[in-house]
Image (tube, rainbow over all chains, first blue to last red; front, side, top):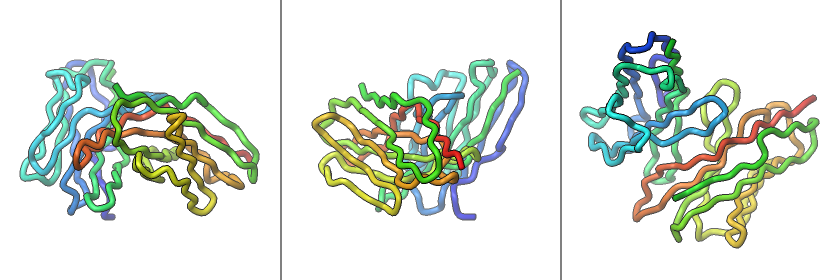
Length: 113
Length: 117
């Protein structure tokens, strides 16, 4: 499978715990995006990378959230001291430069108890 | 600020009916991109179309067609002869296009389409 891969697909955690999600983009795509989707809503932009550089962060990304993309390949999104309001689907996408298509992964669903 | 409105929360049709999903957007940018994505029950967002703000030609792809009207800031999506497999949530999205475009998409809330046999 050569699509965008996310892991884990589902994470259940207790409030206050830290969680980390991983995204492996399509290999030739240099831009990588993180979005969050809550129930009944459209995805909301969180942050994006061009290669290893994080170019923009949304105000939704509080200081408990951190994203990295070492070496411009895979990316991680870490949430520290999780809160129930963090429960959502976290979507990763990578962009094909020539056509501009944005390819999404299947998402990582977080449930904070 | 950018905004995308999909006024139809849910639509239910019978197979073979035509159905149009509405999308109205707001932006101050003169150059932007519009998108439609499909999200089936499996959850993965599937890209359907990207349209540049300078290209107002309507587009048809099989049973799908899109009507872009800049004058009314609308980018509506029509499925002709709907099928049960078309059942999904459909999202309209808008992106800035600064220079090379950053693709920071603003999504609408989506329209849940149910096609009944």
